Amino acid sequence: MMLSLGIWLGGIVLFAVLAPTAFSVLPTRHLAGSIVGPMLSKLHWIGLISGIIFLISSLSYSRIATGDVHALSARNLLVSIMLVLTLISQFGITSRMAALRSSMGEIDNVPPSDAARVEFNALHAWSTRLEVGVLILGLVALYRTAAGFR
Image (tube, rainbow, N blue to C red; front, side, top):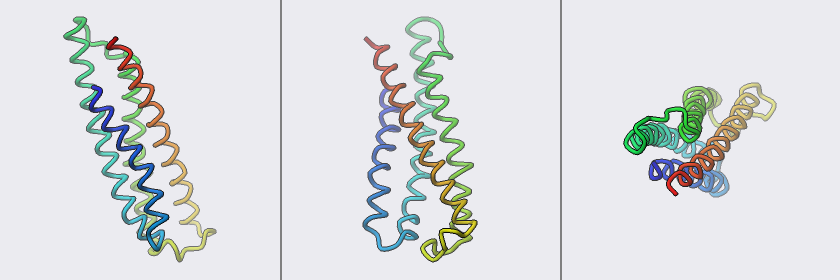
């Protein structure tokens, strides 16, 4: 449980460092986005797999330790919400951002007032909010899980 959650949260923290670095080091926003977009998708898949492994491990551990699966424990609910937010981000927001990015071409040449650019920026803001939410929920789940082993 701890390993799967640690991998997921570590990935989010690493992404939070690498993404801004890509935008500050690479010569264009378009090029940085070409790297950061696929990284975010990979992070989401790591999160989805880690979350499923966490839930399977948590349910198994509870069953072995107490004889009941405790499906609605706080840690399981937190990780389930994290999974839902990640699914929304991956299949709703990120996929729409990729489609917009592809339709705009070089994003650096699109005026900030362009409708597609405005929508892209709004989706980016929601993507960031969801990732921060997943991180916060994950930290709480990590604490709850670690506290349960005392």
